[in-house]
Image (cartoon, rainbow, N blue to C red; front, side, top):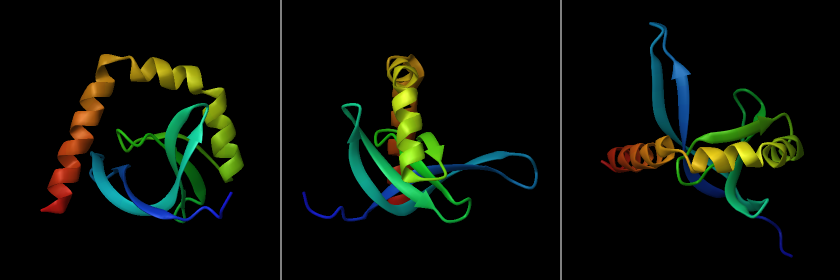
Length: 108
C-alpha cells in the first residue's frame, strides 16, 4: 500500500461569535479520505485546537475527534452505532442539503 496523500476538503466549522450567536462556516482543510468500519470518512488535523477530526463527507460535520488520529478513529469505531442511527434520522437529509447549499455559496 502506498503512502497516504493529503487532499483538500471543505468541512463545516461551527463557532460562537462574540455576540453569542452560533455561526457556521465552510473551511477548506487538508486531510485523508479513509474507510472506517465500512464507512467512508475524511480525517484531518486542526492546528488551532490540536485535535484530529473524523468528518462525514456528505454533511461536512465532525463525527468524532481526538488528540491523535488513532484516538479519533477509535472514538468513531466506538460510536459507529450512533452514527448509523443519525444517518437514518430525518435531520441527516437536512444536514446534507444545507452542506450542499453552503458549498455552492462558497464557490460564488
